[in-house]
Length: 191
Ligand SMILES: C[S@@+](CC[C@H](N)C(=O)[O-])C[C@H]1O[C@@H](n2cnc3c(N)ncnc32)[C@H](O)[C@@H]1O
Image (cartoon, rainbow, N blue to C red):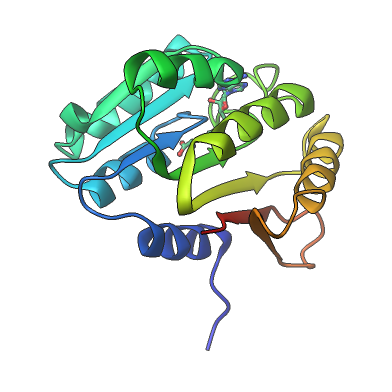
């Protein structure tokens, strides 16, 4: 038996939470791996919205989605995720999300300066939870190996710990070795 990797655990939990036809969100499109995974999970009748601040990320994610033949299920939005609530209210009014994924840090292959930041990440996570349906799932992968990563991870974990368990239950999954391994926060909205 082997422990599941962060990616395997994230995908297993997300697969259990979302179904064909659902609306889901990727808060950090990056190179499009998670966006493509979500698009495959929600099927032909589902919809994904994915945000990123880098035009290059949108280009890479778009190519990956095209290659997987699921691009038509996805809205790729070149916009900061801290404004995602406004986007959802304007474009998907009255709809709730079955799942949402955030993979923090910088885009592999891209600039390490274009990195997620604690304050805006937490704002985006709060807006996401508010729009999750009961039993909906939010996953956040946290990294501590880059400059600012430890501060962001600590702030996000503190924020998650403060959530009322009557409203959202929080799981934290991490390998304690090697040092500075990424970790997964999985937050299930109650209901
Ligand atoms: C680790 S990468 C995401 C990897 C991606 N999920 C994948 O599957 O390839 C983090 C991404 O967050 C983006 N990012 C940083 N700050 C952001 C913000 N405020 N809003 C949206 N995206 C942001 C970066 O541009 C980067 O592409």
